[in-house]
Image 1 (cartoon, helix red, strand yellow):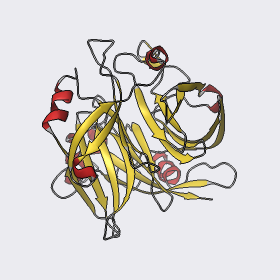
Image 2 (cartoon, helix red, strand yellow; image 1 turned 90 degrees about the vertical axis):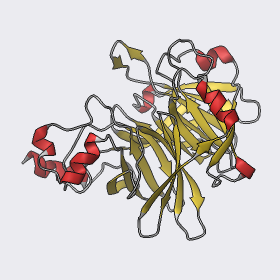
Image 3 (tube, rainbow, N blue to C red; image 1 turned 90 degrees about the horizontal axis):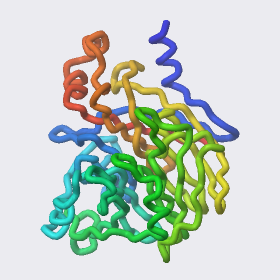
Length: 328
């Protein structure tokens, strides 16, 4: 009975008003030759000449990928290389801990969030702007990485802790939105987080908006639709939120519960940790699971029900990507 209920819940997602979020699929984030590792960021950047959808992926072990999804939903992964100058910057980090990658469709810029690690406070924690060889995002070479100086610095760093930083970053026409993962006391996160709103031209933080009234506990992914409308991934609640930020006010417009679903299993669940969100040019939402290594691999009672390739994917900690259809 429990398995039947899980299949039913995996097939339908709660909705508010006129919107509904329905799952299209869950898939292993890999192609026939390679796969990502601890993917914590995804950003849709446009289309290729053959109309394939293009996404940037950030792994929190220090890798960046280009993901191509063809019209037939075939996946292809290519890893970016770093110039000697960028490698020198990354080599100074206590840990190459990439937590979010964001594409500003208004300017064409790409931003990367690096989390702070011991020794802490770390001067390396922050948001970096990435530059590509010949100015071409598809050159597969990241040629420059420059840290963005948000002010006041004490506000920007006030709630950053070791291994707790900005896991959601995005930009609309006028503002950057910097989402703090959350507040941690001991082993547990609190019931809310903060989204900082900063002027795009001056990088001055204008507002610090609490997510408590919207019911958002952790901000682990952000996508800006424009005009202050944001999609939020709350990892700990396994929920997607649609919100509107106006000044220092936040309004929840929509939320939906995401049910874990092992690809090809017919609704079998696992311990999920979604840490990113983006929207493509057709209105589909994509979320990526950053495997929590302590709990990601299911027990033998689940593994023994899966085919050999699925079990092997879990044992290699290959992330799972979700695609949702937004119905208005």
